[in-house]
Image (cartoon, rainbow, N blue to C red):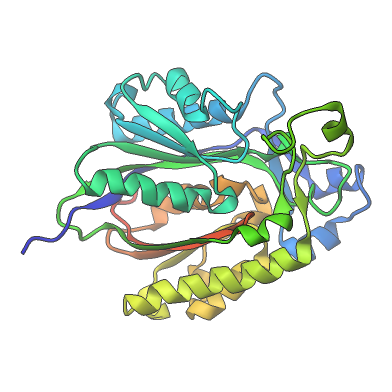
Length: 335
C-alpha cells in the first residue's frame, strides 16, 4: 500500500520591520529596566512597524513575494492563502484578501484565522489538509501580527513583550509521505479568555468613546495564570505528540517553540528531553510576534535543516489555545 500524501514545506520566508525598539528605549517610556525584562522574558529588543500607512497585510504580501522568489514561481500559481493573525487590517475584507491583491496572487482564495499565538499551528494544520486531500497544489500559510497596534505603551506588564513581524511557508504535496506534516494535536479552552484578551472592537464591546476611555482596545494580560497554563500546556502537548508517535528526545532534531518567554521554552524542552542546542530561540531579537514566531524561526534556521529531520512545533496562546505539530523537514539547505 502506498504512503498517504502529506503536506510538505517547500519554501519559507520572513519579513521584519526595520525599526528596533530596545529595552533601553522602553526604560524611557515606562517604569522598567533592561535587566528585569531580560531576566523574566529573555527579550532584548523587538521590531516595530512605524509607518502609519502600513499594516499586517503589507507584511504578509512581503512574505508571499519572498516565497514566490525562493520557489521560482509566480504569485498567480498560488491556490490558497491562510493568514494567522489577531491584528487584521480591518474586520473585512480579510487580511488574506488584501495581501493577495498586493502580492498579485489573483488566482488564490484566502481567509484569516484567529488563534492568537497558536495561530500559525492552527493555520498550518488547516492548510495542510487542502494539500493532503489533493484539492490544492500550492497553499501559503503566513503568521503575521502588528502587535504594536494593540499594545498600551503605558502598561509595563505587556509593552515589553510584543513586537511586529511576519513569516510563512509554502505547502506542496509529498506523494511518498516521507516528509511534511506527520501529526498534530491542537486544543483550546475559552475559560482562559479572561486572563489574556482584547475586549474592545467586537460585537460585545463595539468601539465607542467609553471603550476607548477604558482602554478596551489594548491587550490585557494577567501574567501569573497565563504563565502557569503556558508552561504546563506547551510542555504536555509536545510530550504527548512524541509519545503517541514513539519518539524520544534523541529522535528530535529541532524543537520550534512559540517565542513568548524563555522560561516557558526551557520547560517545554525539558519535558521533551530535548537539549538546549536543539531548540530554536530568537526571542531576544524579536520578542513575541504572536502568530509569526514559529515561522520566523523556520526562516532563520532553514540553512541548518536537512531533509528528513524531525521537528516539533509547539505553541500556547491567549484564549487559551495551544498545540503541537510533528513534521519532517523537506527542504535542502540553500547553496
